[in-house]
Length: 363
Image (cartoon, rainbow, N blue to C red; front, side, top):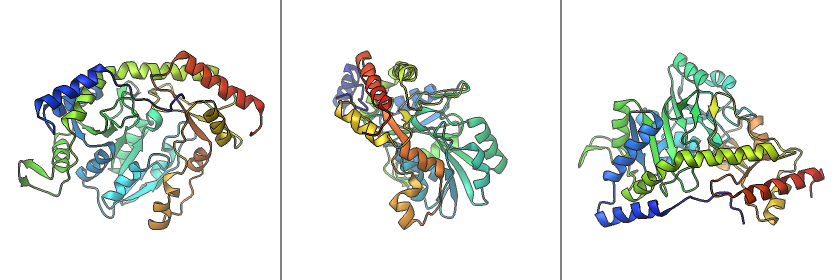
């Protein structure tokens, strides 16, 4: 079976974890600080704050910016639900803007019309590893006096006009096992703002700046040194992992037939956390079943847009129609693109997709 994802764990990660276990310093220790410093350098920012997950990083980022009840957060409906749920956690209301069908990212032409007096943030999602069009988004935010939070949980190392994602607004990353690099589980917030960084650190650690002096309501959203050690071992491999993903994506682009391959604007680098095709004419589910029968794992990211999830419809009262996100949910299919693939794997995937599409009928 060719899996849709496979964490790339080597001897370096195992040795790093063993060292931490032997040290006896397991939580919020020197490995966490070292990981934060190294990750900030990679992203080209002054500060990075490690957390227990990408979701808790999103939660902290919104709290640190003072977003709460009555506020609105503009975001994409076509993403993992944590992007929008982070606004719900703090009592704010997600306002969904439809996507660009070419990139699957938020449609910047629709953002400004969604801004109201209650809007406090634009939370963009660099979906699948492709950066959003950040220059006009930042200009819109500045014009209206709102902040920008970058959900870069799928975009480690991706660039927009030569600048790393996570360095435009407040960046948020995830190190879940299937991400381009992993810490086993964990997250990171990136910023150049020292006051914001300090607030994030307090919120993740029970509202403490000084031990046992609690200045505000906080949470236990800390990263352990065990997870940070894995992340530190993975970080030097990120560039190579991304190059392999990009090479695998180029192979697919050059050889796949009958499907719509990913769009990559010239001013951006795509790091292909997912390689996602569009399958036209209602053939997506049949193609997926066909590939499964041939030992090729796939996944649908995402089968139901956030605004159509039961929580949002039945409990939060959303009735909005967002046709591009809804159409994408019916057509997208992600193929294996991870660094563990061999040339034989790539050829097998291409042959199976092309064979199915050339038949011209749903089986």
